[in-house]
Length: 102
Image (tube, rainbow, N blue to C red; front, side, top):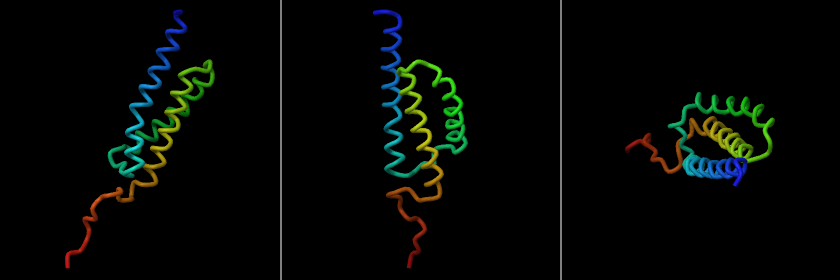
């Protein structure tokens, strides 16, 4: 194996691992709509960072970094969108604690 093929294999494996580690968080956020534990400032900064990082990635040859960066752009964007959309909504399945007792 050449150095380039080892690097490509490592990049592919790390892309799959990073994406796999993020998917459970995404599914839980989508299912519960509970994003209270996520910082809005962090999500905004992650999206700004991804936008700036696009300048770097588009100048690289096509490879695993494109897939990983694309995945991060999509997931960070979705998390920000969901956070803005659901931050005032009560999570699904949550008990209504404001019920009046009669």
